[in-house]
Length: 394
Image 1 (cartoon, one colour):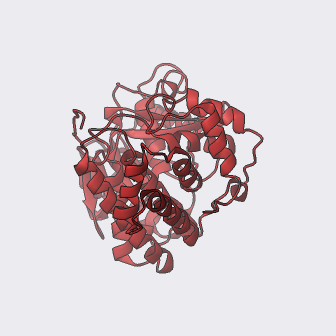
Image 2 (cartoon, rainbow, N blue to C red; image 1 turned 90 degrees about the vertical axis):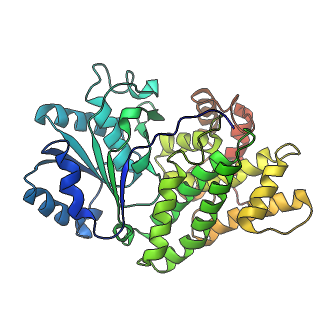
Image 3 (spheres, rainbow, N blue to C red; image 1 turned 60 degrees about the vertical axis):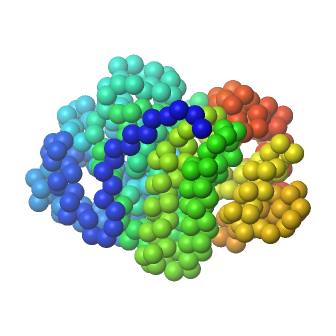
């Protein structure tokens, strides 16, 4: 296990009917609030009206930035930064899932950036400056952005999707009420859970040795998602299922399973190119790529970890290691299929036309050629993309 610091100071307010505590959370930072949200879902489910009443009674001056995209764009970040500067905003209130929170993080730090928000901020990937405080109200279990300091922003003009991190981008307070996810459509619920599983698997399949604590936690969280996702899909207002998915999402990416490990993530690097070029749902792209990546990197050296994954996460009892490893991958693939997640690229509108450019960028914009669980070159990424055009036959 590597040396690491673990200091995550987000104040988590988990459970039903906690929004009466929102004024207390906001008042620490000021009265001028920029509320950031996506489409009309929070208006349909009544959350927008509820928040408006709370903020009005608290005496807040509220400005709004709506229409945040599923893959938040740099243009929206620029709009938010402009509002913050013009209105002298004190605190950002991000209401939504990971895209809204990521956008809010970029805005929060972008207020203090003097240069271009893309080339002088996002493209640098690491931000060490100050940021406006962020309070979140989470409406989707997926990215865990409510308790980490990273975010991902897209630039459709340059066809890039890049992550940015900074200590100051960590949300101050996050409200996690599982009932706010009852109205999330089944497709997004499944895609969000695929994202949770991917975060766990990206940290799990790692070359760092002696990480039993992290791996044991990851296995438990993966089993939790696998158990509760079908229940949430079948019964959307099952509080227990939604609560366990929501808390799994938060714990999957707050550092618990990744601290003490080195390396980089392979499937996210490849999927970011799918989203950058085709603006697809992130979790679905990850679900499609991950089993193909697993089969591609399965070899004698990596087999023990895949066998452990099969036995501890999927309860595979097959004694032959090679067969057991492949059975674990098959069970993951079939689980995604059972949740009605599209499992080939053509199903989400992607053909092979841009594969070479996407493979080139995946390698050159990340460290998967040197620091990944199994290093990937452009030819490897290209093969994984090509394998993703058709169903897997085990």
